[in-house]
Amino acid sequence: MILQYSMMTFKAARRCRMSRRCNLHSTLILAQFAFAGFEILSRVALLKGAGQIVFSFYRNCIASLLLGLVGFIIEKKKRPALTFVTLCKFFFLGFIGVTINQVCYLVGLRYTSAIFASAMRNTIPVITFILAVLCGMEKLSLRRLHGQTKVVGCTLAICGSVLLSIYKGPAVLKSKLSIIPGQHIQSQDLISINTKRTIRIFWMISIKIESWQLGSIFIIVSCLAFAVFLILQTPTLKKYPAPISFAAFACFSSVLQLPVLAMIFEPQRSRWRPASVSEVTSIIYAGVIASGLVSGIQAWGVHEGGPVIVAAYQPLETVVTAILSFMLLKESLHLGSVIGGFLVISGLYLLIWGQEKERHELVSSSKVSDDPQLPFTVLPSNLIPFAAEVESTPSVTGLSEISVVATHVKIANDVLASELPESQRDQKASLESEQVTTS
Image (cartoon, rainbow, N blue to C red; front, top):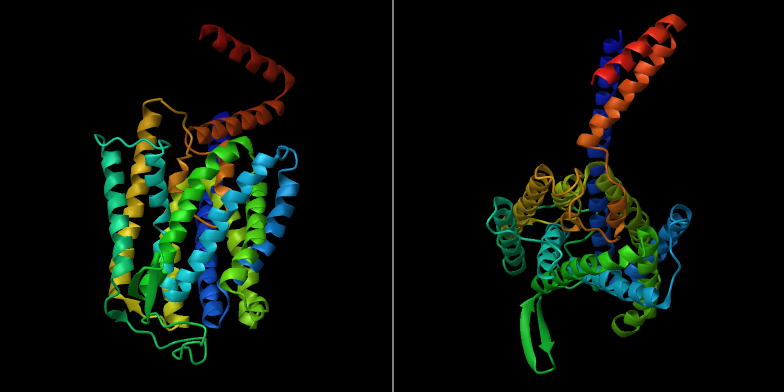
């Protein structure tokens, strides 16, 4: 009878675990679709003349209010006192990880395409890993298979990003669909991606490149800025272990910085008035969904299944963005994007595999506890650093699942024993005491 109850409890725990994994996978898929929607809506707003700096300003106003409210409620007890030095760090990190990252990304999105920008975002974990190795935050063993795999993955990702930046190639699939009337006639505020642009370096050297190549440079700068942001935020969050509040301060710092940039690069007052309903929709969607919901889902996903599984779903957003751009924005799929995107995604998966292989070796050698958390370098980047919160909240996987099942079995046995007559309970207790004495 006890064995039957134990098996029933084990099956129930297994069904619960499978249900949790199913919810995890479905929610992560939903997050990729949600962020792909951000790519599309942002592209639509830019095609209709939205300013990059003003767009980021309104987006961060919404994000800072939302995150500040959530952080105040959730992190009220664990949020340490603010100091002037901490505020200066927040201001600097907000400039790198929010202001530069978002503005450069939107400028790059304006001059390229949603497909291209989404493919380039997959390089951020790779760039972060390289910077972490250079800073001594990650160890790279070239004599082990996982170390060699990481090197190959980084090399493929870098080659893919370079190919995306310098080679466009012929159109593999040409799209004739668009939700924007007359999109083939470029907006007066939007420069065609094939237009030659002149770049002056120190007002002496002039270089002419195509607009899509200029956009790729801005996206690379955006990816590099966020990778640096991930590296620098780690010691800050150790002293200020309230990541949601930190994210709110970073967004608020960007709200203070962006008007200064707007006075220099977008001085027109008309830029501050949303020109269309699509621009207002894009701003609200970016602030609530991209900076709030998606980041929260990714943090929850890291808590439930570890950063590897969350990072593994990152390329799905590129695929969804490519399909939506082809169907809605009349963006053709070019050969350079296909090959470059394939190399970047392949490099990302090799890096993820190397990180997971290293973790398994460390666990098997008993050098670390059986914790599914990996170094932050494999985390898919979003615009808010929620993922750092999971360092103090280990997931219930691996050996911990066995302990959960054992706990359920013990509870079932206790419940069953409580239903026995008193004489049988005394007999059962005496038998258990004899077994303990014998062992």
